[in-house]
Amino acid sequence: MQRLLFIARHESPQRRTSPERKTATTKRSTYFIIILILIYSCQLLAEEADKGEALPLAKTPQTTKPLETKAENTPASAGRKLALGFNLDLLPTVMSAATEHFGMAGQTWVGIDHVMLRLVVAHMHMPDALNGGGKFTGQETTAAALIVDYAFGEHFDGWWIGTGVELWDSNIGLKTTRERVQWNNVVWTLGGGYIWRIVDNFYVNPWVAAHVFVSNPEIRIGREKRKPFPITGEASLKIGYFFDL
Image 1 (cartoon, rainbow, N blue to C red):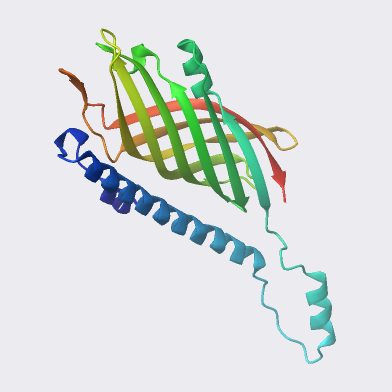
Image 2: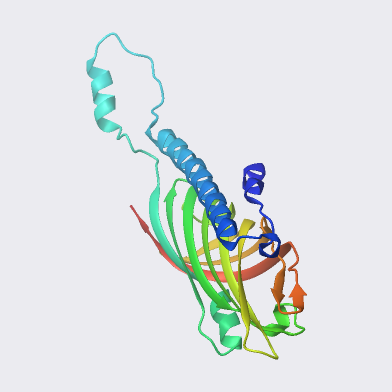
């Protein structure tokens, strides 16, 4: 999957002679990556569903009556766990509050046995001390992500690990002018944490993750320029609840 994600690498916006061509190429690469992740996620979910539906083989007796009794007493979904969950990530809220702005990250996921397919939407204002400082200020990022997680616990809990693709839309300005610049990043992410169910299915989830910029254009405003480091990390705490289906 990592090699497929790097297909989406594209050149910096400043090296393109046509903004329309750059936008079209970025959209095609983005759609391609999302389709690959969806296909891979559906395959994982289908495999987990097949495991739940599979019944152990047994020796067939001479008479059909015992076999019919076993089939009636064994549901097709025996052992399979299904869930729909929601959670909030506190990092964007805390970071944005430090800049006197509002930020939020909402997530929803569908789980089959140990596999969870998670959709993330987030908006965050970055403190100047964390965006490279210098003459740039007011970085703002909106992100969407599709992540596949695997939980090692028996009930969508315990240690977990996950990977997926993220799309970041960011803008930043200069301290000396009102001019701002906007750019996009395609990001591959790898993370993990621990899901601790406190009461019923209400849980807290401390986690860490690393983000690798598949596309990482240079940022320029007038004569000022900067290029973000290609790898970044974060740690946060999520709170949420899930419903058993």
